[in-house]
Length: 216
Ligand SMILES: N[C@@H](CCC(=O)N[C@@H](CS)C(=O)NCC(=O)O)C(=O)O
Image 1 (tube, rainbow, N blue to C red):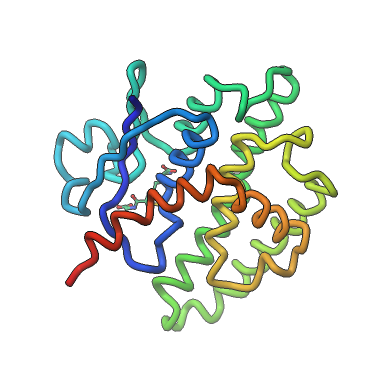
Image 2: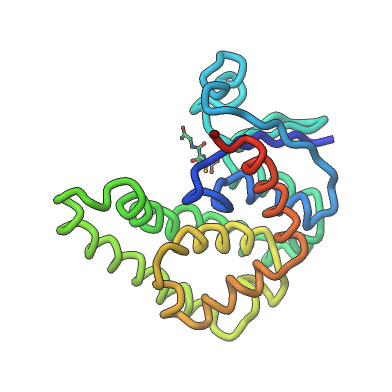
């Protein structure tokens, strides 16, 4: 059975955003049972964990065949073994991989920078100059993404794929702002993805330990 690492507890701003959600969601979509290995922050510094995840982050993943880290690579691995998340047609497969990298390489960097500013540095003077530039870059990316999505329900060939897992998860990191709402097709896209039963199960499973392990 696959194992995915996740945190026992995170502060409320990170609930539902931790990247093990991407892997849990992919596994739920493919119907593969898995177990989570819950870590405290201190557990990520051990030599044993660093040999598995060199940066001490979550998620890390292993199954009977592979041991991996990097959520995008793990989702790709899971998707490749199932036709639910990766179409059979080579041109469509190539587009799914393209959009997976686009989510992580072209959209996530500015989204992460903006949420980093807002969540960790909001009151610092330098953010007054930097934040507008970063928000403008996020809006540029979202506008282009909305145009590319057009009136399709999903990124590739009208069917849900691994690319939609990564893109939705990246866009969720803007939930502390109203930015996505300014792009109605993207807001509807995120809502459509979040309504999937597999997403709901993955989210509930990520959240479950947080209550149990909340600091007193
Ligand atoms: N590129 C990595 C990023 C993983 C990552 O940033 N994980 C966060 C949780 S979402 C983490 O473990 N943060 C703790 C840390 O960086 O020390 C991936 O996609 O797997």
